[in-house]
Image (cartoon, rainbow, N blue to C red; front, side, top):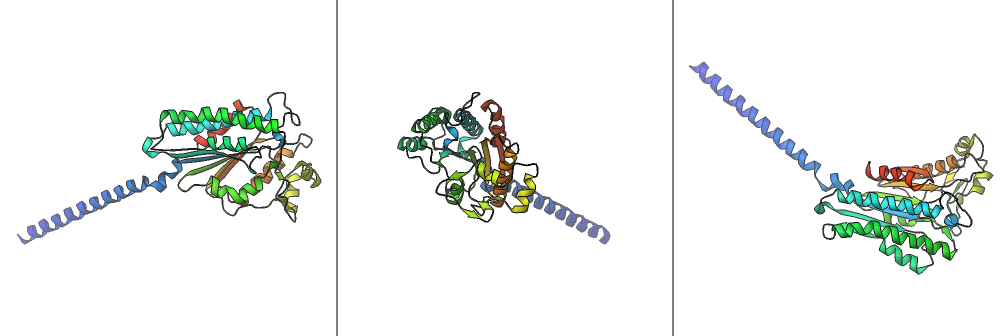
Length: 304
């Protein structure tokens, strides 16, 4: 009789223990589910896309004509693809989840006040209060029309002061292009050369600029160009300490054709520069027809 009682008590204790463990497992699973849907975990679904336009003489149809397609027209095609990728992303989201941004920047700001006024029209912020179908569709139309006006005005002015890309990274990129709890993407439209008359800094073999003349002077037009870069520590001066929350896509690189290694040298300079600044992820592409670069842009924005 006593043995039966003891067995009964043990059975009850085991049953209580098993049920308790199951309950704990259930609580743990619930905690895991809750952790997955916290804002921090979902923050990368909020896009913050910035476009930096290089309005230097690289877009001049007189200085750098291109019979296949002018370089400014290529830029416009790239911008159209960027805007489309942005709106496609928004359309996949529920309205209550929207917190997405897109904007266009220059450095320095153009002297033409009309260009600066147009750039304000290219700043879009979408949240649950304004994410209507009409507002979203306005992005593509506005980007197509207004960016064409910017290039048209810049070319007609024919006053190319250069593009201070280095100083943009030093002074502006954190404030303009990085938002907390967002996937921050910066897209640069440039020929790959960096020069601005008022930002010429040199520290040993590191500089704040990159021009064809310097590449030739450093002997980076021979097959051993990479060895020379490493041996002499040629490169760009770091302009920022930590860009680990920024992804960068560089489009439109247009190397001097007199040097068969020019494109590789440019990409090496930029790549090493981004690594110094701890950029999260980057891709550097040479100029191509918009129809070919469209996939590059959409893959970078949509498929990461």
